[in-house]
Length: 72
Image 1 (tube, rainbow, N blue to C red):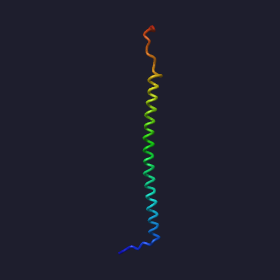
Image 2: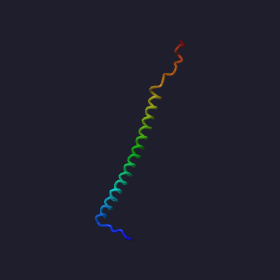
Image 3: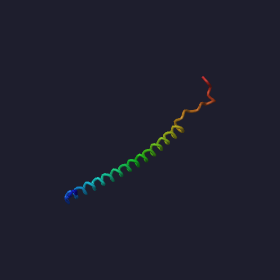
């Protein structure tokens, strides 16, 4: 028992198949873009945290106890 497929149905099926392939490729590219964005975002967050810690350690640290000052 064979199914008869008209050329119009075949063209519709090809159109749907092409559209699904297009959506699949767009989804893969979007996922790759998001992964790259996350990678660079993580790198920038790490470097900004490093810069903040560096400035805290060098410029914002508490002054050391001066031994020349008398105890009160």
